[in-house]
Image 1 (tube, rainbow, N blue to C red):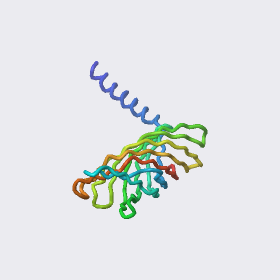
Image 2 (cartoon, rainbow, N blue to C red; image 1 turned 180 degrees about the vertical axis):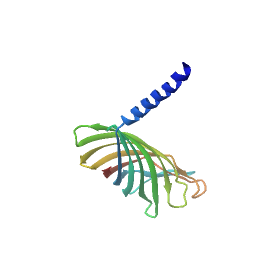
Image 3 (spheres, one colour; image 1 turned 30 degrees about the vertical axis):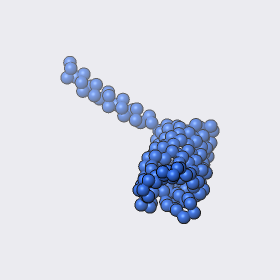
Image 4 (cartoon, rainbow, N blue to C red; image 1 turned 45 degrees about the horizontal axis):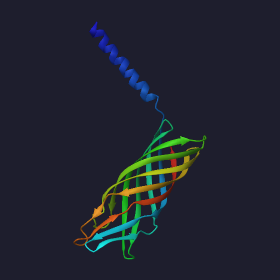
Length: 188
């Protein structure tokens, strides 16, 4: 009897797993981002004290792609680039790769609100050690038009990187920043 029940159980289990996967609606997408840093600062710590220098409101641009599961759970992997300008002489590029999760609130067939969190890694283009983890939250709104989505979001990012190689006894670090991003997305 056991020889019959075991294969039957395996067939039923495989069917249940296949049915569960088939029930998940998947919507794949790719897109482009364009935004602006609304606030942020570079902090310099030394034996003489701390000094915060505001970062210029520079443009942020990037690309993203991912999948939306069951119309509500969006998983995105994205890349962005921005310029860090401070002290009128120091400037460097900052590249960031982030994984994001958003919950999509469908208000109408064409209009959604989103809210979620992100986790990623940033890399400075100069020789500094301003490389490190970033994490944050975002909330936004989007409009769907056929296979296209047009949206915007406000984000708040926390930085963990600290550069201690510039000058002895001087440590630079990025402070938290707020961003406003717009995006255009194509859904397959």
